[in-house]
Length: 332
Image (cartoon, rainbow, N blue to C red; front, side, top):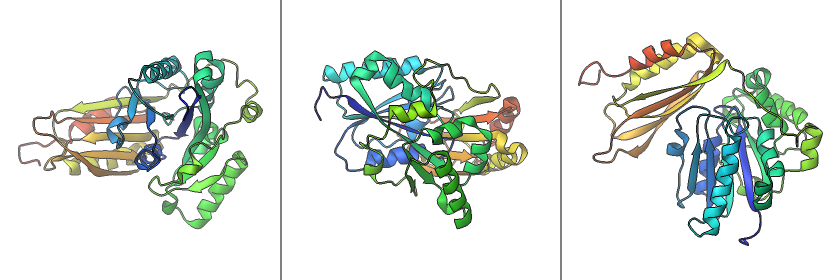
């Protein structure tokens, strides 16, 4: 790739828990022979997605926390892209493309807008495509309740449908029909465990400005974007290990009590009796964990859990989660 050619950028979006990080990990692991600079945006004040990412080729990972790319930290995106380009020009880092993973609450339109209205960005980068991951299990409810989920589908150049194995054929066909009605120009692909043909997400030259203007005539205007104040995030940190059984019971209670109000939760956990950290993720009532990297000798072992919800009583959540640590040294 010519060093002075505009750097292609892929925006990976999708609602909370759709599986964006799983798709991103597949892209990073794949044998494409390119180096990718990754910009991670998380809604909460603490980021855990960086911990969940594979970095087999020494990828440059930049985290943007405590805000959403489409509103409060959009200026940070411009600055980060500028700084990445400067470091690349100086030979400090090397990358061939940029992949931006947005928070699940992002409206992709203002993010895409950045590549056309900011001169410094437009001269150095090329928006290649917006790729949206759709959760087959929860999409109907999310599309009905959240304008951001609808915008993510409407602006997509590719639609990746995850978790199709969790719904029956009739429900899947109905979802695909609904998505086609919302965005007939975006090809749909079923993905299992984030596996997708790279030719369908990279260098597809999918983003068309004229199409964006048809979707939103004010696309190039510097319009503001704000989230519903009822949606907020809360972070729990602890240096005490978790009793996994107690934590699972706590989450069952929370999801049973608050239902769809508890939208998303994820974290990196220190669990009693396990020398590996646990990567824990959940969407509404569905959750699970997988073992991660071993804790290194002498490493400070700590847990971080991030919750996102609507009208949630975070004080009560704190009390319940804090009770999930062992009562004594036996781990019980």
